[in-house]
Amino acid sequence: MDDLQLLREMRSDVGSAPPATLARGREKLMTKIGQSSTVEETRPQATVTPIRFRRRLLFVSAAAALIVGGIVVADVVRPGAPGATAEAAEVLNNAAAATIRTSDPVLGPGQYLKIETQELTGGGAQTADGREVNWQETTAGQVYVPANRDGEWVWNREPRVPLESSTDEAKALAAEIAARDSYRPAGQPSSVGIVRAPGGAFYGNEPTAIIGTPLKDAGNLPKDPRALLDLIYERTKGAGKTPDSEAFVTIADGLRTGAVPAELRAALYKAAALIPGVTLSDRQATIDGRTGTAIGIPSPDGAARTDIIIDPASGLVIGEQSVLLNYLGSPAGTVTSWSSVRTSVVNSAP
Amino acid sequence: MSTDSDIIRRSRDSPAVFGQLYDRHASAIYRYAARRAGDFAADDVTSETFLIAWEQLGNYDVSRDDARPWLFGIATNLLRQHHRAEATVLKAAAKSAAREALADDSDRIAAEVDAKVATGRMAHALKSMAAIDRETLLLYAWADLTYDGIALAMNVPVGTVRSRLNRARQTLRTQFNLEKLSETENHHGRPAAAPRNA
Image (cartoon, rainbow over all chains, first blue to last red; front, side):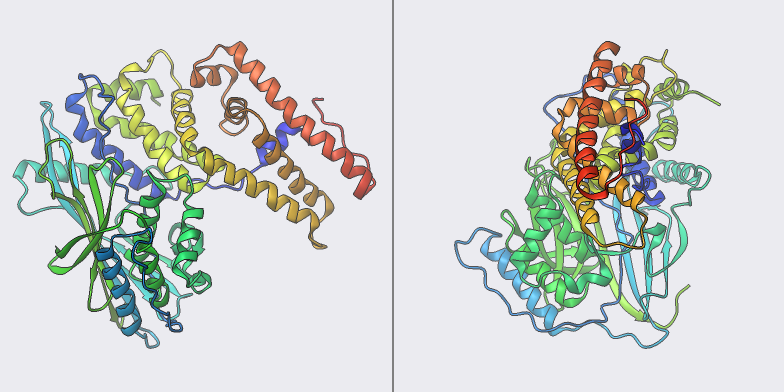
């Protein structure tokens, strides 16, 4: 075998993107195209980078938190130690304690853990006469995790719906986009409807607890918050805008799934409390009709902030939001997107 | 079937058409980026590549039917921001090959183990060469671009592509042959096959 041949085979086992990842990337691109095409003739401004809200596709890696682990000793963040602000650290450590008190739901045979998500995102399009129309739309989805996690998981993805308050024109454009999106190249599944996968491996991807660790191995992750955070830094090296914001987003990704076992959830909260720059954003943040405490980290350019919203009583993450801080004249505090998570136990799946 | 340049020309008037370019090439860009720097980086690089392509649509030379050199060129630039992830990937490849060599794996035939070990050496060689040579080599071997395509992608004359490729393959062969030789003497006691193109 010659050198080139060998090189060609090297890492040839790396597969292509899961169809759902590509579908999501396409959506992002088409949204951007819809928004930016009116300024096509202007020169690109070198100093302003558009904010791209990072929303990694997660395959809502729900897994029933069937294993409630041992006791996690609550660490106290030392005053003056580098990490989140004192207020944020207190909220996070309290959430960790609440998590341990309220154990995960126990499923009987045949029952499912139902994880409902609802997401608000921006939509936009350019009309035939070149005007730009923007609106907000919601997407809902439900994942059903069987009591036996090796069994068949069911994921229902609902179509995107523009808010009722949108203009008729926006609704018509959104319908047009939905029709276009329903087209998929041969071999690629649609992004709406029901998919099923044994063990939750939708599109061949095993659900993960944090990047690099499948959900079923969540118990092997370090229980010590510092060790856990170091591992997250290690695994996210080189990704994201800064190591700290990437670590925070990684933790938020795990918590958002609604399926990480309580013990790991508690450790993730405490790890988040060690990340420099993490602050208490809002004691009374309302998301999808529920109120919780928002903890966030600003983007390095200070333009926006990503928050997770915690129900202080249960220690559960009830959602996530992106908030504008200082961006192109938009009012500070504008929530540009949010997602909410609810979990319940049900007796059947679709 | 329309060419890439048809799509690009049409999408200047009807932006939605640009999605077709994504449908054609996103998967190849993703895989290339994932091979170089892992899934995590590939996710970012793929979406950024097409966003940047969209922003620079006006610069595309529509006399070129195939947009792949252009897209891989953008992706190559973006991958430079992920050099640490790439180093991690290569380090892991080198390491896993070393483990493979030591493991008592009687189920596997020796040739397969050899291939694994050789891959580890490739990883070493890739790590040790200049970034610009590695980019050129991988655009050739993994992205399957022609010399002309690489010249377009990296915005250099074809002659430069040739010399970079030569240099890169020299590094590869040196690493491969030297170690193959010492391994032959020390472990397996059978001659190494000469590279066909040596």
